[in-house]
Image 1: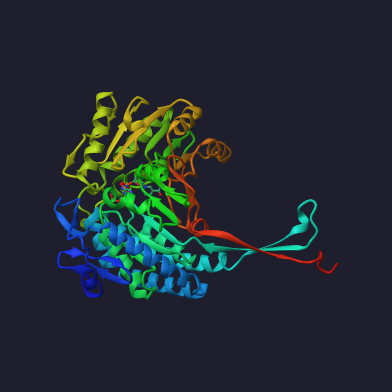
Image 2: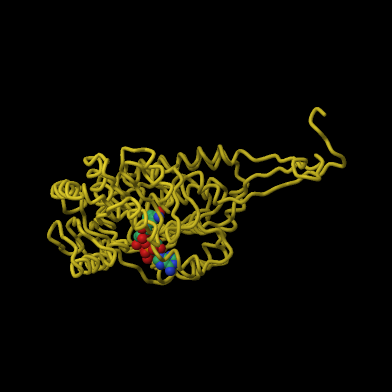
Length: 498
Ligand code: NAP
């Protein structure tokens, strides 16, 4: 079986340290420094990546600017062809890339493979969608606006923005990178990727698949280093024409500092699951467990608070407890359901939320158990609004249940959150579901299913502190373009067949 950093990927490794990608080449940073990536399961250093310098970032930006000009002149069908090629190479090499996801972010082995395959599919779909939507423009005629004759024809089409900076988070370092790379490239932009530190090596392997596909030099680059060290330099760089970021509160800080460039921000969430009395309780249970605990709760769209009608709460809590007891807790290599959370500081943060809930009297449905970064699944019942876990995103396998006495109470809690990513409602009454969906201040509401980002062509957006703009393949392509018009002025009005 292929192993990370070997075979076709041997080029991307220099001894113990993975190289960064600039001007179509794999390079060693002049900094002489590297950043360690700690395996969440073993808590030992697994990989090392280059700590790129500001000077290297400057060079990458210069090369991207030059490459973008030529790329924008490359026919759309050729851009699509290269993306399809990259998608196929990515899928072909799913095993070594998935291996990195297992070792860097403790993603269960099967889910790691799915992430890579889904990413290949996303790139192909993006190529197809781009060919359609960028192949169309608009013709406007002037006589629809009061006082005008039909003597002006406005031709509008979409043009690239220039250099797009992509910063994905650790939890989907491949998928959330390609969801930015694909749209940027098909639209004629250059792309600079700053992968998350945990997940950087998976991202470097993915970038190598684009390299193997034969994209022009400098069009795609990948600089590594700690976000806290090179992040500001990148996001405030004058060479950047668009920022697409997915992550936590860091995105709010970036939004305040970034210059006059379009921003796509997909940030945190506290997705509420509102359960009504007439809901199918088995469906609710399955979705609470899957939605709240898949990938140990480290998903932006995880169910992060259950708001359940008091009359059915005991029954659902019992059912969820029974299902949680059956989850396999352990290592990602064994394809466990619950695996270690990404870093020790994440585990400490989760623990602090749990201890706060304990002090304030939440009911523990299981005993709290932690070994290293591994936290056993925990359901906290009778959570009240004065507890931190009622509002904060644990990003771990811990789920609070708040019992409610009216639907209004549930909607009120959901809307009092600073976040507004997704939410879900369980009821058999579609009329009620629509009313509740309309009342919830979130970017998406799922009816009778847990929140989810996919399928990847659906619009995906957060309100309030959960984001700016909308993702999803079509929306991302549109966001990474600007409308350009050319107006033909006729010497006298002309009416078709007039
Ligand atoms: P994070 O700490 O905000 O990091 C996200 C990315 O930002 C990483 O690549 C990080 O690099 C980089 N970064 C850190 N400081 C930076 C700076 N000053 N300037 C520029 N970049 C900087 O988030 P995370 O812990 O990776 O991911 C978890 C969060 O992401 C959760 O809040 C989750 O809800 C959210 N999320 C949202 C979505 C969505 O679509 N709405 C999807 C997935 C996750 P380093 O790793 O090197 O620090």
